[in-house]
Each structure stands twice: as structure tokens, then as C-alpha cells.
Image 1 (tube, rainbow, N blue to C red):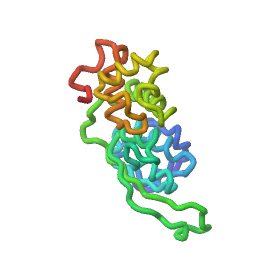
Image 2: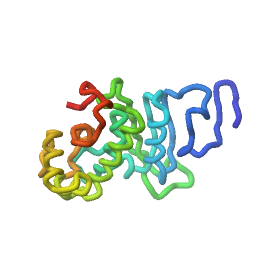
Image 3: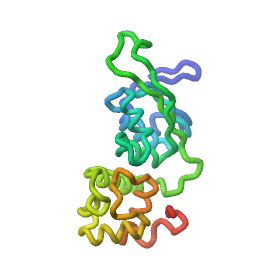
Image 4: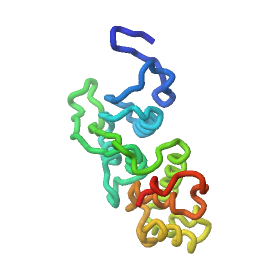
Length: 206
């Protein structure tokens, strides 16, 4: 740990850095993330530091494509949905390997994330964990219909269809087409999703 004027250098594992490690809450992230842990690092920082409003990172080009992918596309997947739990995602171009030395074998991409000014759903850790678990279920068999993809989670095909319809989701849709709002709404509208004394109706995604 060293400090020079307004610069503080922390020798920490990015996946374990906590609010207690910093004197002041950060408001922005600008980084060239280690490509093999880029997604876990992003999700950890956004979850651990609600004060972060803007993120601009360089990651491997394929990771950038997955983060910014739209529903239904071949690159759209778990990272695409989970990062949108926190904010809007945009691509900002490619970075050629020739700008580095030694020259890597991969292209890089810039990604910007702007946290929602006002979230349309609860952002506490417990709620986020439940929604993230549901996202994992939905993409475990991404090419199946939503009814079949959530069959194990719901307990039966009929119950799966019932929960999907309650969340205004066509059971015939594929899991790979669901948006973050769909996953949140599915969790909230499920019969046993939340105890009665938790999130009020006004916090639900309509």
C-alpha cells in the first residue's frame, strides 16, 4: 500500500477488494481487466461498490461482445444479463493487438457500463443472488423453451408455464431471449419467490 498525493495504490486481489479497503467510496472504474477474470471482476465491483456510477474497461474482444450482446443473439448469455442488473452496457470499439508489446494473440474491446440512475428492482444482495441463480437456470439449457428450461426450478412443466405466464412471459420463448427485466419479473411473480413482508408491489417490474 502506498499513497502519493491523491493516488492510492492497493496491492489486493480484485475479486476480494471490499469497501473497508478504501478511504472513500469510488464513483468510477477505468481499467484494463485481466481477461480470464474480467466478468467476475466487473460483477464484484458493481455489487460491492454501489457508489460506482460509470465503468470503462478494456477486455478481450469476445468478452466485450458477450457483455454488450442483445437478447436472442448468439453471444447473448449469462454475463450479458447479469451486468444489466446494474446498468446499461455499450461497446466502444476494438483495440488492435499491435498497440501492445509484446503483441498478444487476441483483440481487445472497450465496454462502458452506466449504472441506472434509479433501479427498477431491489438491489440488495439477497435479491440479486436469487435473480442471478434464476439467470443461471435459464441459460443452463438456453436453446430449450422457457417452460422446459425452468422445469426443474419450478418443480413441473405446468408450474413452470404458470409462473412464466404470471410474469407475462410466453412459455414457448427460449431462455436465451429473456431480458434482465424478464428474469426479475419471473422471480418476483413466482408463487413462492418472496415472503409477503418483503419487496412492495411498487418495486416490482411491470
